Image (cartoon, rainbow, N blue to C red; front, top):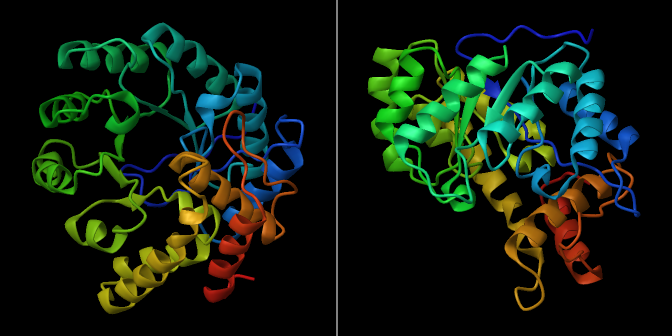
Length: 313
């Protein structure tokens, strides 16, 4: 059986959502997955999130998802927890992916509300309760309305936290006011509940407000920077945290590599993350999954310039 890492409650720290390295033919590059996971663990991150949005989970087959997750779990070797994205349209499909994650040795699951079909908060709560009952692993809710077209309500999160259905929340809603209003009652209702922000540009402010950590896509590129930011915030050194956040915000400009006339924002951002870790020598190939538009020479030059200005090349 894979070696599982204990999941602290609340779970805190920097948890990068791994990109999924692919070969030029579009298959999962196992060696690069392992190398990326090792690189991030070596940078001092507190966990790994596999098969999220940055991991292109929506583009991968079930077999490819299993391959990527197994490689990351094996590379982590129990040193940090591995959170597995089990993102699917319906409860039954999520439970199938949860079984795969359990078998692969994941330490926790991350699931969205159901999507494509329109759902009511009562149905969303039932969805998460069925997932928790059907898979014996800690469960994190992933609030990402831009992708699933529904926002997790405060009452739903509070109820699922209080009854132990959810171990935590990954907030990628972009609604920082709503998150701020959730934190105080959440601490009273479920002090062991973990809140992780998915906004890599406002981590210092979120930590000051009381979140437990961050899941930064840019953490693939500069995990050391996010670890420094987190440690400074935990120490109450907010000047250092702000300076590190300012530097990372400038680095985040690499996601604007793509020409909007020929590619979407997802192609640009995920392509830039992969181009960056490729240029850093961590993964072998910067390919993104079809039908995303690959970056060209001009876009690569944009990414290289940002890495150089940040001192990462």
